[in-house]
Every structure is written in structure tokens, then in C-alpha cells.
Image (cartoon, rainbow, N blue to C red):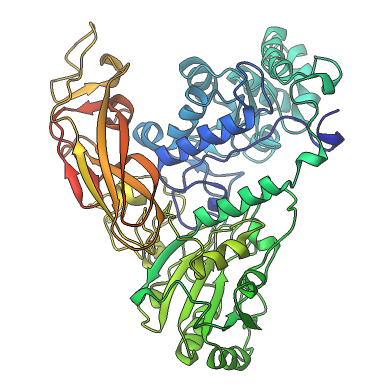
Length: 616
């Protein structure tokens, strides 16, 4: 009927869970550890899929997995049995932020509830999470769907109810509209006959699902007469789309280290490149999980081969890099070539759905291979990493023989072309890390199952993400260097921002931290004008990261990203960037009871080395 008979028009994407723990196997699906970044990504993703034709949907997006879902299978605990114990503060402050943005700002057509329990209740059976928050507070215009077989899971594996009919009734009454799987189809009628459920509840679920089908045009007759009905196979893999895949890969690459400007490589001086490592000629690894069918692949080896002659040695048979295979051929290649590029890292055998990592180091003997090749290399040695999650590569950061380190993530079908464009300077890298890269020591005694975000000095709990962790890092959140240098100047910013209160002032404000619900938030924002100057000799894109440090105390994070803006600046020139920060949403903090408040006093705004102290 649609999509050539191969797929429907409802897409269960994007994944907007927070990358809370660096070992999570599905971290690769998410845009990182910061709730605001994840939320903005989710909103943009949803708008891109659904289109901008009012109530009409191009396709229906779905923000998943609601909520506090980020343990797949760790140390004997799996997602089907995990009970995430989450404070009201962390729920409001971290886990639910992207979902709220998906609904309220993205107008997403669907939310998917997760397998896990939250505080003892399966998310797909919790009326507070579904009916009260998603529908009531956020006003979802769409349907709520269970992750595949979630209702079956909470009956058969979590034993949350005594009978399957009770499970079906609990889910539908909690606000679930659609089941991915046969469970509701098998047991809902029985639940009605047993008096556990009313037909009215089923009608509500049907209303929510059928309305989305109507918005997709499924009742509008022959698809070719509808606005998107003429899209077909000829619209897939067009040159423009393939160029976009390449551009996305280029923009997503992060330069972590560039000692003595060993990058970019030069086609004049580096005629032969030793290309070494288990990820140096891979295809499917580059697209990670939940990917479509690529048009074609360009591997790193193929990409580098467009710039120079290559001497290829795998070094390790695969990323596990186990066994006692000799590295002699790889070392010989490094001795011969003008430069050496090692393409190492992870793949879906190490991190994936249902597969969390046990540690943060490179698997097997990869580190040994890198160090030995770097020691033998005649020319500069460049380490390229493919992975979804962070890797502890302290050894390479500290090794003077390794001139540069590049993180490519899982860069998609054009990954090899994008990597080589960065290595040879056709593209100036501008990516920033969306997550903290921790040392291995961070996870040694840290259970993945402890959901607390904030650190605890009494217990020695380190806290999670850049917002709450003060310890050592390999690379911080937001790290990423360029082949040029940028300078910031704050041109204009308000010294004082007044927070007007509504009529219902009461003692809960106490003059120090105003409840967001009692402030007049509409249009309340803090505007900045920032000049960004490219003081180097290469054109480049730069992402401005604006952090806020709230007044001391007040349940606050160490700092919080409140705005980010990418700007392209030609060498030697300057661009002015306007930034608008919503006070109630971004300058607020969450108290121990889960209430969002705006702390009064001096908030410090940081942009690079520049800082500004507006008073609220």
C-alpha cells in the first residue's frame, strides 16, 4: 500500500534516551549525554520525518524508549527485568527532558514506552507516566506504543500481574494505545469479558491510532493523488542524498588530538600510506545498528586510496583482536610508508542492542598493535577510531609517536570518504564530542544499574555526565579541535534579567529560587551577541557552546549547556552570532521534589574562555 509495499508510514525513531553510562550498547543510537542536545536533536529529527504541512504527516515519528531506559544486558541484569530506581529530581532534570521536547516542541506523533520498570512499575503499565504526564501534562497528539512484546514481558517475565487479561487491562487503562506484538490482540477481549476493562478504554486507544493513520492520508484513496504519493524508488540514493550522507559524516568527525599539526596529511609529502587495523576496510560496521540499506559504501581504505597509494594490513582479524597473531606485516607496512593510518575501535560484536560493554578500553590486543605500529612507523601515525560509545585511549593521547587521534563514530555509507577528506585537509573537522570520554577507572566499581545522576561525597559515588561528574576524563564533553583557531568576544549581553511572577505567589518561592510554574515565562529570554573570529589560516565551521553555572547550591549541576550554534567563518574573518536563551527552560534547576525553579542571583555564562555574569 505504501513505500512500495515494503514498509509502512510509521517509524519508531528517534532514540532519545540519555547516554548516562559509557558502557551502554545502544549509546550509538543516541545523540549523547546532554538532555538539551538530545531534545533538540529529537525535535529536529521528528520535524524532518513528519514534514511541516500542519496536521498532515509525511511519516509518523516516534520518540523512544520512555523512560530511564539505558541498561540492555550488564552483569546478569537485562532490560526485560531491570527496575530503574529514579528520583523525581533526576526524572525531571534529565531522563524526561528529551521526551517532553519531542512532544511539546516537535509535536511527535508517537511515544514508545520501554521494557524496564521505573520505581517498581512497568513503564507501559504506569498511568502516571503515560496518561498523566505524556497525555495530560505534555498534551501528546498521537499514540503511545509499547516496545515490542513489552506487555508480554511485564506479564511473563516480570510477573507484574497474575493473569494475561490483567496485564492487557493495566496497559490500556494506563494509556497504551498500540502493542508491538500479539499480546493485546489475544487477551484484550477476555479482559473486557472479565470486567477488567471497558470498551470505552479500547475506543480511546483506537481513536489515537486511527487519527494518526488519517493524518498520514491512509483514508484518502489512491496514494498517487496525495501530497507525497509520487515518491518512489527513483527518489532513493539520488546524488543529492548521497552528498548529504557524505556531508553528515564529515560534520560528525571529531579531531581529538593533533600534536604539532601532524594533520592534515599532504599529497605532496605523503605519497604512500600504510592503512592498518580491523576497521580499515569495513563496510557494514560504518552504519551501526538500526540503519537502512546503503546505496554503496566507501571504506577508509578506499577513501585514502583516492589521495595516495596504500599499503593495507589488517593487523587483527577483527575488532576482538584476540589470539597471538603476529603483527610483523603491519609493522613492515608502517616502516615503508610515508605515513600510517590505524583504523581501530569497536563494532556491533562489542556494543549493540542487548549487548553492553564490560569496560572502556580497546578490545583484545588493539592497544598493543597501535603502540607497536606507532613505534615502527617511518612517518606520522594517525589513529582513527570507529565506535558509538567512548573509549579510554589515554595511552594514545600520551604517546608522542601518535600524532593525531580522530573519532569517526559510525559514520555511515560514505564514512571512508569523509575520514580521508579530514585526514588530507579537504574538510576542516568541526565536530564536538556529544559525551564525556572517561578513563577505565571510572567504571571499575560503578554499577550500570545505579541510576543516580548526582555525585555523593559520603558514598564516593562519582556522578554521571559532565553535568555532575568532577573527576578525571580522557576527553571532556564538547571537546573537538580544528585545523584553525577561533576567538570569541561577547559583544552584548544583559547585566540583569527580571523574572516576572504570576498572581499566585506564595511561600514556596522564598525569594531565592522561583518556581517556574509561578513565573511568567512567555517570551522571557536572555539574548547574547557573540563575535567569532577565525584567527587561523584555514576556513572552518565552529560550534559555539554556551554553558550556564547557576548560583551555588540550589540542587544545581556543575554546569549546563544552554545553547549551541554552528557558524562557518572564513580564515581571517569574523561572524556575529545571536543566541537566545529561554530563562525558564534553560536557566532553571530542579529541586529534590522534582520541581523546576529559577535560582535568583548571579548565573555565570561561559563561551570558551569568555564569561558573563547576568543577575536574575
